[in-house]
Image 1 (cartoon, rainbow, N blue to C red):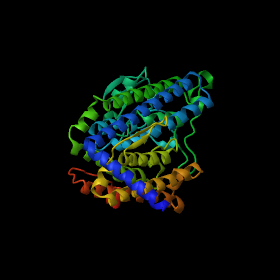
Image 2: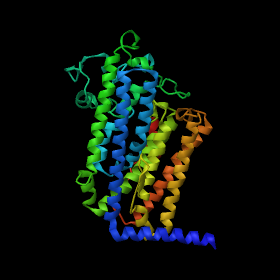
Image 3: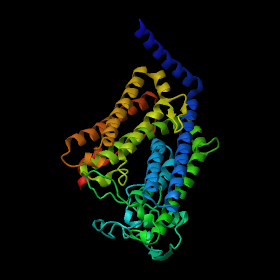
Image 4: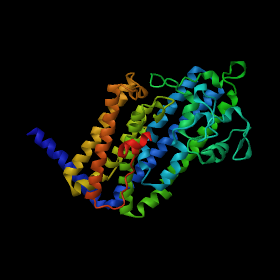
Length: 422
């Protein structure tokens, strides 16, 4: 009888959760979603501030140990931020802002020195090898630019997406990543970027020139990241625009939640971030290509989707933020569909967890993308198939909740593969 008692207890718990959600209505679900968003952006801010402390220590006292500490702080900062990406797509305020902090891939030659194999300016991007760090003045769009002082304002207002070119990424996590790791020149072989700590050293110990300006750029980019995260965390506060917009219309708010879940799962992660790179066997399509941290980015993106459905998030300090959820709303309509959705999310996290485990054991994500690596392809395709499968369940949830306006973004890599090679 004991297993029956446990099953009954679990069912009673689900029923209680659904009843709690119904008692508070959709507003209760949306309020919890906003609370989780606020917590994630606050955690992203906190970890970015820790990154700043490590960056400042590296610039003040360059050493191998301080470079490694800054790299570790960057990787830690990605954990809460990647879980926040599920707030894109459905929330215009996030999607409009996101390019400042997480745009990729980037033409790293805009920022600093690159290997000769990188090439130079192209018809698509005449600034691809500008190397702002080496040039205190340059011409942009026919105008002279004074870059003697590298400041957050210079990066944000002048350089980021200069000439309207998205690859001219001058700010955010990936600009900082490049400055900490340098280019990854290993192709689909094992190994991340190998920037030496002496790229920040003083005097004759300085390698690759302009070490002081390189430090200035790294600090300016980190300061700007912090100010951007401060702004977004405030938008989800009690009087913030993101929260008030979300709560202004219940059905539109629930639609935003499912749009974010579906678009991140399908077009963005399964398509642009995973399937495309596998089709092209191209490590340049890695999301965190300089640091070889892509396995973690994929994992925490997936976890963010699961968080939204279950209405829970574990903060970096171990605190659990939880409350009425989409799962509760679906249970009240169709308990079997809720079980299906939970199962699909769990399957995806298992598949993404396998990628993460394999990478941590030594099979890096860029190796998984190599042509002919059947084991690596199977790992990546496991994640892709899990994300596609959960998207199909998200679509059924949309129908069950009788919602209009959920537009899940697609990707040529999934919907029109032949177009990828045209």
